Image 1 (spheres, rainbow, N blue to C red):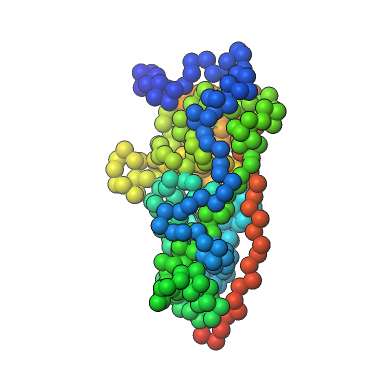
Image 2: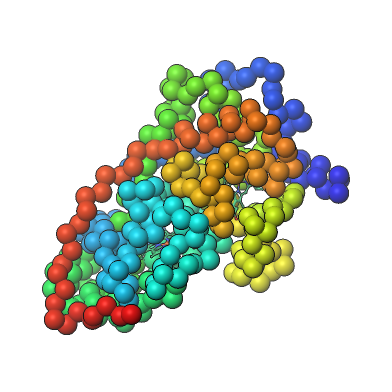
Length: 349
Ligand code: HEM
Ligand code: HEM
């Protein structure tokens, strides 16, 4: 066991002595940090196979906020990904159709465009594929592609918007185009200019000593080997419990994560390393949503992923660093939605 711990520690690049006597200077720390992380773009990124046009974004915003995409006409994307609350619902696990409790915690849609795969288990490859899931999921919006198209075609204003957003298409009101428009809108949901980004861009004075110590620890203890890149996570898959599996109250045995996607034994309890931008806003934590306190989440990561019992001051410093990842929230003006017509399907129970 000790041997395997040592090799895992080596794999993760865990430093022997995590509390360096002398902290790095801000410029050395920045240099090291830039080997692991990227400044978040302040411009809307390009999306593969889906040009982000003004018309698509406007339509996608309406769809994101329109509860008539759900069978009950009560639940919109924004119900569980509330853009006024960090892009999630701040619930342990989401409440969907018929007040059903879903199996997992809702991740934020903010910066989701930068994740390499969507969902805790990565089962959707991009936001377009993703957006078709919740509309049809029985525990979320409980609708069908046919019903959604019927709803959208029943309102002349929507038909017009689809015609403008998908020029040249003979029948633009489709389930696929709904997903494309939502994906284009989601690409605009980015949060630039966090204090962390300002530090990466050269501002030495923007982080406190504790926050810089936290960043250094985040790198040196090995957190950054799984949580890296532009979203400080959201790229790779790892067992939850590389070194020590957390208890059943945090890691419920019924949800085996990526195993359900790949049916490979080595993917038992494998999940995507969560993207950590705006983590301050998105409690409770982990796919089970069982941990409300960010300091506790950090301590659990230390023992489960690194086999390191972080002491109180280390936990506080790392948490302080994580709070610097909160960026500028996108300003979203609430859309005025087309009024239902006589032919719009009535809300279903
Ligand atoms: C996951 C968008 C509706 C609950 C996600 C993700 C995105 C997203 C982008 C992946 C984020 C990530 O992996 O980092 C949308 C859109 C919706 C919608 C565009 C409307 C069409 C809903 C609703 C609920 C919900 C109504 C709650 C009833 C969840 C949950 C997950 C999730 C629980 C995680 C599921 C898992 O990992 O297995 N959503 N969502 N979403 N969303 Fe939504
Ligand atoms: C989740 C922080 C090390 C893999 C998380 C979350 C936080 C976090 C706050 C919750 C994200 C959320 O709920 O949205 C840290 C810190 C670390 C660390 C501070 C260092 C002490 C690691 C390492 C790995 C890893 C080394 C990979 C071996 C994961 C995975 C999840 C996760 C797979 C998702 C767990 C789940 O809910 O299923 N991390 N992490 N983390 N982290 Fe880490």
